[in-house]
Length: 501
Ligand SMILES: Cc1cc2nc3c(=O)[nH]c(=O)nc-3n(C[C@H](O)[C@H](O)[C@H](O)COP(=O)(O)OP(=O)(O)OC[C@H]3O[C@@H](n4cnc5c(N)ncnc54)[C@H](O)[C@@H]3O)c2cc1C
Image (cartoon, rainbow, N blue to C red; front, side, top):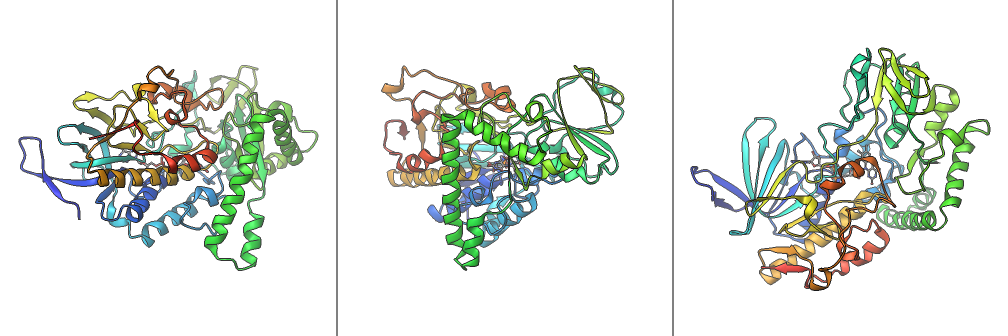
């Protein structure tokens, strides 16, 4: 049970609950954090606060047709819970998997749903955070204090997606929908649909809707890299036939997938042209020699500058081959009453326009942070390995990988946080903060991410909201799982970068 302490604020006799750790968000990172806390820091009191009505985060928010992962679940799943299905999973399957983690480990009692956090104030006087927010079911305000904040709120705003403003949008007589807020009542049977965008979301939506619509068009400004393969893992299937234990299969297949991805990632940096040709050959094999792959499927960027969208069983290409789906590449000039006019003069008529145009970056869950009475400008902090931030005591953030499964990093960060909490306990420290060491003082400070290497729109639009990085590995989110898996567990918690009190 959490201990309770009197509210330090005047004018009320109410008591505020207090926890050792408060986890923000019950997505894959927050639920994983809760699991690791119970295993690695037994006896630690903690609570998980979640705005939505249930767990799942991304997999609960997105309800568009076909919603599925684009990473394999052997690596998107936790390292501690075997994945027993096909590599690419539907949101429903991921939610079931997470539900089992919660049930098997008795985590439900720690999670409070419908608790939207609005503010977090750090007080150096009593070394604790005060978290305030509103219950979305009753409208009641709540206030909780905690020694340590574990930010598992993801990286985008869940309440609405990003839709650019195009001229004439108000003129369009049909319906405009964003995949993130898919209307339950949307009837697209027999309708003409234009999907703006060609990322993983568009690649999922189009095959899922193609059978029902009159026609569906993927309208893109510029092409994306796609990789098509069977939604099956041969090694996993063989090991299952041999009746190998599922926990072994999970570990072996994870290692194999991670090894293959390592090779692929390194090759895409070392020989980008060759990798590009291979990816394009894969698309050609699905679409046939007469298809204009040069216009519609040949990106201008190098492989891995943006996440490569995976197309399980080539389903996107099947729709295109059948004629039910098509791709148009061009700039939008304006929306019209009947659809969209392109700069080329081409008109696309539509009953429904789906804007698969991405997210609003939300670095800290739209929570107003204050440290000792001063509003926190997160963009002015410097990150310690993409997990902690200068000037922000007792706080860690889970920001996963772009080129590998997010959960790989959620597990690694969880190990780090648990080790740090245990270290603080052993040192009897009530506060930890990262600070630049004397040798870091003249280090150049750069944006959060190197846009030469990774540059999706939502990151570019929101870069000023994200912490800065240095030019040393300690002061960066390197996006390199293969090195971090050895480096993060080896962090010396008594290094001068950690200041305890
Ligand atoms: C459609 C889609 C598909 C994706 N597919 C993959 C994939 O296949 N592989 C991959 O690696 N990554 C994928 N990603 C990235 C994905 O978001 C992450 O991998 C992962 O699900 C993030 O988990 P998370 O728990 O860190 O954050 P989220 O899933 O974003 O969950 C955060 C939770 O925090 C809650 N929250 C936020 N702010 C507050 C607040 N102020 N108060 C209370 N609660 C709050 C939210 O309601 C949410 O439930 C995908 C993303 C999208 C949008």
